[in-house]
Amino acid sequence: MKDALAIFRAALRAADPEEAVYRHLRREADTLIAGGRRYSLKRFDRVHVIGAGKAGAAMARAVERVLGKNICGGFVNVPEGASLGARRVTLNSSGHPVPDERGLSGARRIEQIARSATSRDLLICVISGGASALLPSPAHPVTLDDMRRATTQLLACGATIHELNTIRKHLETLKGGQLARMAAPGRVISLILSDVVGDDLDVIGSGPTVGDTSSFADAARIFEKYGVAPPKSIAARIALGARGEIPETPRAAEIRNVHNLIAGSNRLAIDAAAVKARQLGYRTMVLSTFVEGETADVARTHAAIVKEILTRSRPLRPPACILSGGETTVTLRGAGLGGRNQEFVLAAAIALERFRPFTILSAGTDGIDGPTDAAGAIASQDTLSCASAMGLDPREYLRHNDSYRFFERAGGLIKTGPTGTNVMDVRVILIV
Image (cartoon, rainbow, N blue to C red; front, top):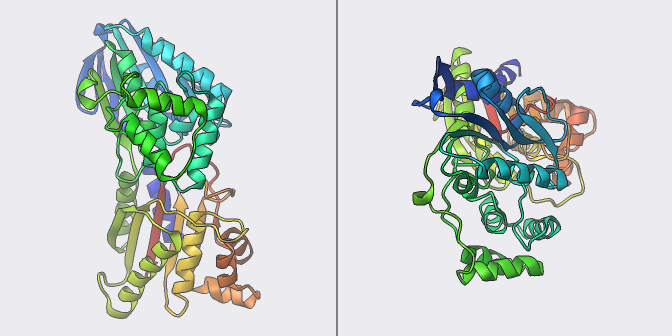
């Protein structure tokens, strides 16, 4: 288990938001270098830092360390309890995952900064997971309560993150490239920490600095698809937009003077985990960083690969390490306590009950797995044996989506505390 935890920690280090900023942003005298592009700081009278997200505090601090006194101020919405400490940038604690008035007030302040930008201004925008909820900016006549009600309804119907963000882009004033549009003619550098499978820029944080491809008509179709009747204010705005009486979100061709950079992602975290695994002597294969689907099904698929390695030494010979990333979902059928990562480990361990030796780890890089204080779990071939000796039935715990209580008793919970980052999940399987 020690090796699996070391590999996971390597992934976490690669996902560190401050290090992610330093990899993409540096200064040489009066020149700022961002992702290979060079910006003369003498061209700008003001430099502001704006944005939102779970990693917003750490990213803002890193930008401050790079630019120091060149920063004249800024405003970033961060979740309650996020580590503060920035000197020149205001870090505004806001509601997450449920948007609140503090987030709305912060969004209005960010909008003011963007609208005041001139060609002599540089805005550095930091965006990370959670930005959609942390940066609420409902457009008239939509209210924050209307947004919350519609989002809750769509979530309950199984709407995807892409669908939810399409709705948000057309009911709010900052998302879907609108922040970039209002910042013109100012220059924008957007540093983005991806929490989205595939790193789709227009989906991360609902793409405030990225050209949009969706429309008001698309938003209307999503409500129709799920049979959801939106609040009157939302229905009215979408109808106006569909008739062309409200401008669409800006297309990519309309976004100018903006440089969007993926500063950190699940792929980079998994790549770092692979390097560590090879250093520890494992033949290593990255299965995918695009893993989605029902958690238990994904777990059984991973277990099938482990069985192939243990019985036929393919696609790798032991000692082997299989890595994957992405984000799965759990369809709740019981009233237990757990999260997708803990459920993955429990389901995979059950599928491998008669096979050995193996170690399975799955954890969220944000340190939070479902409504629990664990990031995920780890299990080996001995976990189910120990559980059986304690009189625990793992299948019964899985049936009730109660993986947290299983690992709480059998051992194996991984507790990192909130990490201040979020690049989805990391799964590590070792076969020796």
